[in-house]
Length: 431
Image 1 (tube, rainbow, N blue to C red):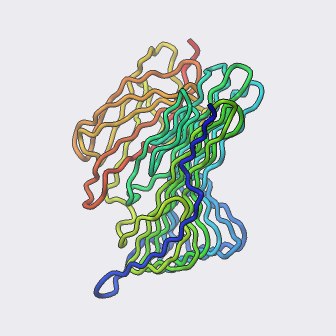
Image 2 (image 1 turned 30 degrees about the vertical axis):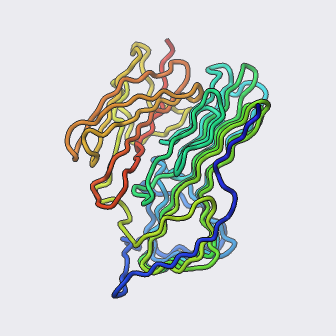
Image 3 (image 1 turned 120 degrees about the vertical axis):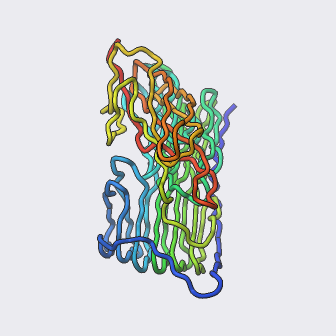
């Protein structure tokens, strides 16, 4: 039976927001230093994200017809645009993911996964029948299993016999800010390379001490799964958060739709979940076109969590992980000696995470699905530690990642899922 499930909703919604703070007029401070000056592109522009992903502008003005894109940094942080004064977006800000590659005849040993947008996660590679007949699981806390869609605000779609859809994660406040997860790659037999999963949509925060006027478009869409007889799953949509003293504008668009699945002969793939939207201002008269999900609306809050939580993989099999991993299958961050036998010990450290929090460690092969184990952090709020025993594939590189869900110390913030800042690609010497 052929089936295709796509949880992304294509019907546009119009969301009129009227939110005014009581009593005396209040103002919000973005915290921008203004060090990067005014950002006023007149032609299509691609900005390379700094190491922390944060730009400190005075003003931002993107005219109609101009598209601004971003190149991911090594840590793959979200995009943060801070401004001391007005922000006007009549053009387009783009942090969407890319689609997974289509099914091809023959054996392809590289990755055909869709790339996540800045702050989002890559899709899983399609299987080639050599290293494995099962596709790769999408990366991220809501990564879709082989052929399944990624989760975020909701669960992903899934019809693959070997892959479960990705689970929901994150919170309405978008604190901390995190992007969408990748869809799973398709399964394949020898002689065919199946389709890759779509990447997860990126994450962007725009904060202004003055007014944000939005008449243009901000896209943080998930990538679609590649097509063919063994299709890939769709990546989930990303995250958009706007914070300002005043937000206005008519017919601006915020798009965090998930990527679609695809149909094949006898089997289909799952679509990615919709992402998340957050709009915060003391005075808000914006009329927004939103796709798939209405925004969460509130008065301004902190740009980022005070004493933000971190979760870091510090060593795998006794090999210390690099401070700035490349997370590239073609250039592994660490190589385990052949003498190290499975399972290997993985060491984690955390800051500003409650002791007793459960951490999920996932080992994602480039193909061949994934393996997940859990462990518990111990120590103090300022410094926690845990170890886990994990099995590392010996015939292909893999990505090792970790995530934790907990209630932060900041009052009024819902339980959150944070993803490890380091995602290490591990390979093994021939055995």
